[in-house]
Length: 75
Image (cartoon, rainbow, N blue to C red; front, side):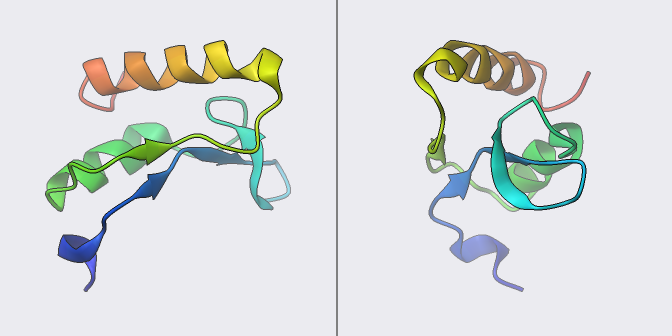
């Protein structure tokens, strides 16, 4: 219902127990191969925000997202 009103999206992950936003992107169980194409399907072109990461996690999370985005969000 609100897809066309999304102005920012978070790139955090879910832990195995399902607690949201506690893991760096690509290290948990969130299905980015579903999430990213879904954002695109709704015309989302805004920023994808990484936050709450330890410094050592940043490069890996950025690389993960860049690869997924380059592949259209899927393997």
